[in-house]
Image 1 (cartoon, protein in one colour):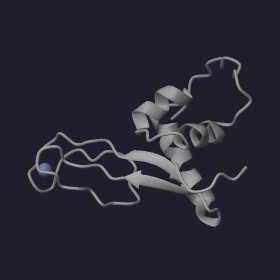
Image 2 (cartoon, helix red, strand yellow; image 1 turned 120 degrees about the vertical axis):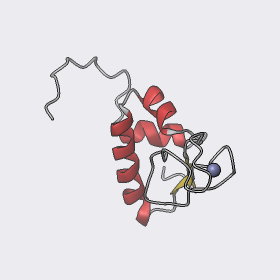
Image 3 (cartoon, protein in one colour; image 1 turned 60 degrees about the horizontal axis):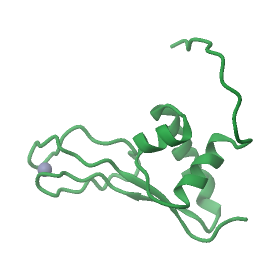
Amino acid sequence: MSKPLAPKPPPQRSQTPRQVLIDLLGHQSYDVRQLSKEAHLSERDVLFQLEELQRSLKKSPQRLEIEPARCLSCGYTFETRERFQRPGRCPKCKGQRISHPLFSLRGPSQE
Ligand SMILES: [Zn+2]
């Protein structure tokens, strides 16, 4: 579990990864893959940040909205709130065409 020590490019904006995600999610919905690309984070880091974000928003008027993953074959909706990752297969029809959960921020800005 050791990470290679790659030199990181200097950040163009002086924002923490969480602030970048808040920024993005405040404007529109994204799935994890899109967030990973936009925020220049690995998908694992995005998931970690989202969990942290959800936790940190508990006392704030803002909320992390999660549109759950859905089976594209039968329409089954995965209502698991804790899981941010896309499930592998549908328990109902065993289909594997599953939409990605979408994340967005709702509520008044904290600024
Ligand atoms: Zn299904």
